[in-house]
Amino acid sequence: MDRVTLTRPDDWHVHLRDGASLASVVGHSAAWSGRILAMPNLKPPVTTVAMAQAYHARIRAALPEGASCTPLLSLYLTEETSVEEVWAAHQAGWVVAFKYYPMGATTHSEAGVRHLARCQPVLQAMAECGLPLQVHGEVTDPGVDVFAREARFIERELAPLLERLPELRVVFEHITTAEAVAFVRQAGAGVGATITPQHLLYNRNALFQGGIRPHYYCLPVLKKERHRQVLLEAVAEGHPRFFLGTDSAPHGRSTKEAACGCAGIYSAPLALPLYAEAFESVQALAKLEGFASHYGADFYRVPRNKDQITLVRHPWTVPDSYPYGDSVVVPLRAGERMEWQIESDTISQGS
Ligand code: NCD
Ligand code: ZN
Image (tube, rainbow, N blue to C red; front, side, top):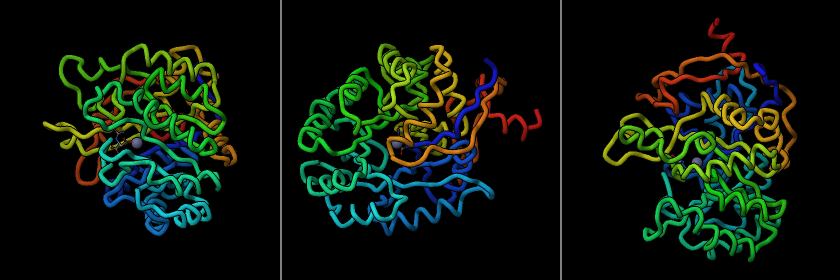
């Protein structure tokens, strides 16, 4: 198969940043996504509907002319979030979730939640109005091995949370382990999960290939091959509660190539071709459309996109970097070969 046509996908987890950085990256997502769910971990974090409204306007203003992409937002959950804010978010329509960052778990999570129990009334309100909680599922306990933080999170936080509030709708974000896949499989229809291209295509060896490779570093960190295989099995089977969320997370080159480099992998310009490669590796290209374009929309209870997008087998080389505000961002696979390409890109490049 050298062509795959599918319903236009949505990206249910993407970091668009703000200001000049936003302007640099948003077009890469808008080129192939119908909806882009922008994460709220800005500085300061997007904690209220009023702040989200302003950010939503900045995203819309930064979209390339003629883009038909719809930005959606997630509000940053804090221990101060009020029940009123939940209902206001629900009314806004384009706020489709709250994002739970355990305090200190990842980039810009300083304002995150230390004790989820303190958010109980707010979580209850979310359960009532059906707003999903997006979860960064890693414990922050420094005594827990960095590769075990997701599995411990399930036992210590996620399972107890759903026992306290079984009606709460949860998206377990950017899952990386067999334990997470098993948890989602045994959970009810109210629990879904996003999977990134990097966790489908790479294991933790990629971080140390001939030296330390900062552009393969994200959180949750890449895991062992055995876990990657389980993620691939889940998507290859077409399980409807696993769906596309790139977690594309740009950082300027100098903040990644540093003594203490930031977590985050930039994949927006090539994410869909990367997913195609992952699905093809397990003879499951036919399942790509469900994962990329159907199951996320179904989970978020929005109509599937009406238009289509075509991928063609058309090898190309990923640029070494893309402009990023007054810096550059190094994408996943920089300088390396890609097998698939979005058809409109082959046309616009005249190749
Ligand atoms: C994200 C970022 O840079 O904002 N980084 C990452 O490694 N994924 C934050 C996040 O989603 O954890
Ligand atoms: Zn993220």
